[in-house]
Length: 360
Image (cartoon, rainbow, N blue to C red; front, side, top):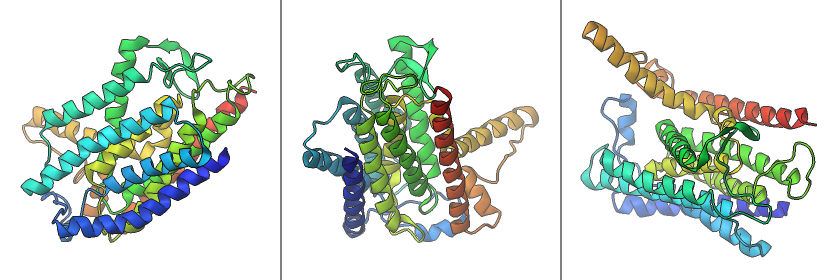
């Protein structure tokens, strides 16, 4: 069954590599170009009009790769995989509407905050509720109502209602963290490809040590680990194919369509593989970007309350733009942030394996 993981990655890679330039021409002909924030680095103004909504290619390539893989291997799709794909597609659809409004109204802001919140909430809550259903023969559901690190933490049971709340905060946080990271050519795409590669390894390892096939000490009570690895492989392949065209100088941007979808997929994989807290390490770069914005806003409001004049912790947030304002070349920022992302992934996988070895 390891062939299925390879099939998904290769099919997604090829579809994304071929599909992205087609999308570039399609969006360019219709004038679906990126709007640039006025307060950002002025070097970015030359990017105005670059085709956006490229995340549609990532989403479609991932879906196609997964379902074609199922046909080739003659296997039935599992509940866990379908739920992660549902979450990815639903949040991607919200991002698509957001991107389209930006283009149609020629502004850097798309959906109103309330409308965007409603769209995200419906998708996330539906995912969280459904993830507690569909038990297999062993009674395992796609998600557990316990908070997990490498395994479920026994004393951290939430119950159905609190699990939905926890899932909402987790998924909304990750989708927006990836969205904030997507500000430089190839940055979010490359970091996402690395993060999903970690979940390919985790899914394959959990499959080999599943309680369903090997009920030994330290086995994993994950419902569909191999299928989650297939989804992660499809996402990884899609990101790598898209990165070929999204790397500097970018021919197309993923837009909110891609960033919200990828963040949602990452969170969904963490929940269904029962590694929600481990994801904090694997996706460390995304959290760094998100917290730079939180710190910036918090510091500004605190100093404004104290002195009447707000001060900024960074020249601009998210933090990748701060380094640009310090004079770093965009490509240098991207490469160095990719290094950080790679280190986070390596550390996460090291902790994952170390936790397994410690149980033996």
